[in-house]
Image (cartoon, rainbow, N blue to C red):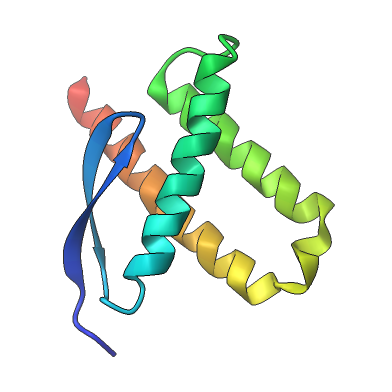
Amino acid sequence: MATPRSIEITILGRVYKVACSREEEPALVAAAHYLDDKMREIRDSAKVIGAERIAIMAGLNLAHELLSNGGGGQTEEARARLAQCNAVLDAVLEDQDELF
């Protein structure tokens, strides 16, 4: 297995460093872009305020999409993407905890 390295991803205008292997980087970057898009949609709807709440709503929406579509025959890929999204959400929430 490749050695993890740190890459930067941007979500809602904030930069986060995330560890991943070189092989996982394209998928992680794609997941971060997808999550950023979903979070921006939620933020721009003006129904949810605060990065933590936006992240939770985005996570719920993504989980609902996955479960509603039965995984779309891509269960393993979806699980990997969800794991990556969870890692990004964990990093976001961890950063939020450090603010207070």
